[in-house]
Length: 196
Ligand code: 5GP
Image (cartoon, rainbow, N blue to C red; front, side, top):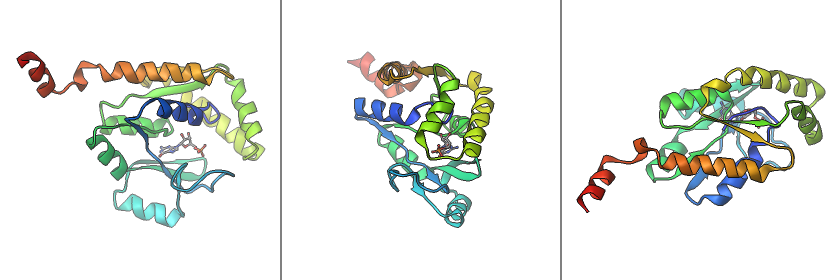
């Protein structure tokens, strides 16, 4: 799930996770400082830049990107192990990271999250009170740049102001229907059905 900063991705991921037992969140690593209330290992793995770069060199990330002066990356081992164990994985990289993940996992489903009005992004970021005006301006500019990639995504979900449950319903519908896609059904399962 990608989308501009302030689109409400965190709330939607939480809502979706609560509805699906076999869906796990991939915690990313970042070199940015924790915001008040953010916990290491739960919201992010907060790493020093040198440590991040060391892991990057040894192939520890599936993809990584610099965003607004900080590094972000998806740890490879968690995704590999979780998929192998038959779980679905949800993560929320910025758009280039999402596209990079889809090129490694062609079955990955890319969902773009937006608020019902772009102008809400500024007010949501201001209400967070965690960023300077300069940083907010940079994030809004990135938001418009990221939106130019929207047609490369599979789904668009609109997170309406004060109605996150509706957007979670939409996400749930996507997860449910994606699970029925014929290309996800192993040949062994089709054979089993036919022979039963
Ligand atoms: P924030 O600092 O607001 O938590 O995240 C900034 C941006 O980095 C957001 O667009 C977020 O989705 C993205 N991001 C978070 N984790 C990852 C990751 O592992 N890889 C990439 N490429 N982007 C990430």
